[in-house]
Length: 231
Image (tube, rainbow, N blue to C red):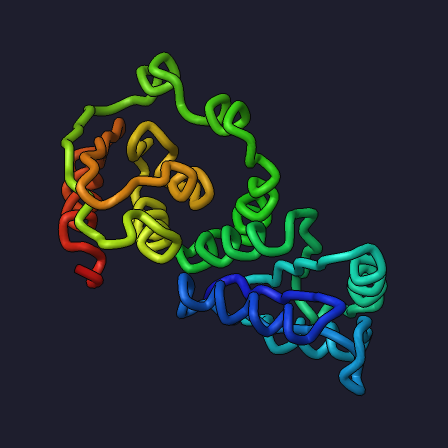
């Protein structure tokens, strides 16, 4: 079971488009749109949100993302009215697009509802200073118990390390206990990997510290060298 995701927007087109985008990076995750009113107008619908939550619930929980103020208020009202049989549902305070995509990738990697919500909230950290502060420091890496491993690999994708391959990397990195960095960025954060802007022909370091560091570096470097099925 994986955490389900619901996208609430005033516009059905926005909700459906975002679901289509996120699904490209998290094919096995149930992501359900709840956009517009019951009769197709701009607005929000209690009934559509409630039905979307029910559809997205697999037993692992549901993370709900909403765009503007009244969408948030409607979603909050739905959550307040849910009974115990609805399972655990959480409204996540995050940018709609970046938060939904980051959460979907986390869910695809088997993350818990709390971890999925945290991935969504991490989308607020978009400035370069914030990204640098949140990346593991050398001192922090040294505190991680276990062996170290690293290698350098060339990006061969025509479009570089864009969203879809970045999502594959993050999903793969999430399976390891080791602390992993790619180009110095946290390999388990989609937004930080995308922010690298790594282009074709660029060499990038894959490094890990922890009990499964060697395996992590081998798998992630092989994934990059393969071109993610695009090259």
